[in-house]
Image (cartoon, rainbow, N blue to C red; front, side):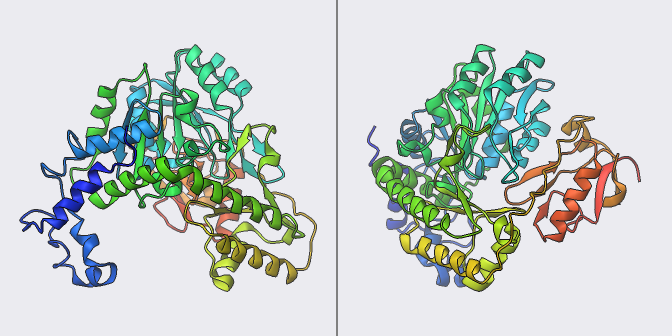
Length: 482
């Protein structure tokens, strides 16, 4: 296919150039009804903010230029079908689970999966079988899953319908995806892959293998995170003999908006062209500056920028080097403290912080001067800091026991109790640190003393906690009547 073409973007440009008189939504009418925003971002952006019509196609049932753009996307990723998403990869994750599973079906899921996975469980009625990811005790983070652990889980749950995999993890660790796909398919289980942080990986040979390359059935990729499109735009990819395209379309029609943003859709069309034509060169530069920064940071006393040196360790078959993940424990700071220092003192905003690490995302738009600024900041912080021995990592609490399914817990009556009084109760909500949005506890699980203590530590560090009715998590909603 002609990857230089942008059928949707071209159609939208024709619409704007035709100076159409709009008697359709949106009501701002090409920005004239929203002048303050138009003055700030420019008239053209709001002229492009239109709705579905014959010459621009309809996102929830495409037959024209959107379908052409989706076919080009599928071709670029070596998939049979691609579906544009305007509600992020969260919508894609939920669509994958609902496409593969019916109520009561078992699905094998890593316990460090994103909260959208639990949403997909609730919507589908599937029963999660949690598989514990490998834990790197030195770094205090969850890695990928191993083939050996999956074999054991499949043996205990031979009738599971699907296996869900994260590729890569937020920190950059990648499981042996080809082996996992082969194992799952040998047991007639579909493989669904959350590639929220791996949309770029198809376009450079030194990056880890992607879901479509490994033979997975479906993947959801956040084009906006690492591949250049606008925030909230993602793609759902299908390449399966086990899951029909009609089933996927039926699932998407349940939740897909009938008023998809053409700015988001066009950004997908353009980002795909850029990756297909120039992705290798752009990613070569991203890898080059990321490697330079990692090497520089590793010469700073008290810092450890981890990467390919983790390859071969449990749960890390390969590593995405565009994730500039740095362990900061040797400086005597938490990752949350370093995040605050970088923002308030050096005007740098990183992607992720946890108790012991930070992660800076290096992508298509980064320049070496940006990485130089980050490296200088790290050197300056280290010079001003009294050196300490590496602090002991705070252990991630063991996964809680699931007492009732997430779906049953979602629909059960709930009551609010003080966090410290919730030990032994069954959680009626998810509690997660965001980013990355991985639940500390899921609804339907038994609250343990270790989990409460971990949440209290996160609160002390002013971590952004989400999922609870009480934004400060003084109270936790548990199953039971008030």
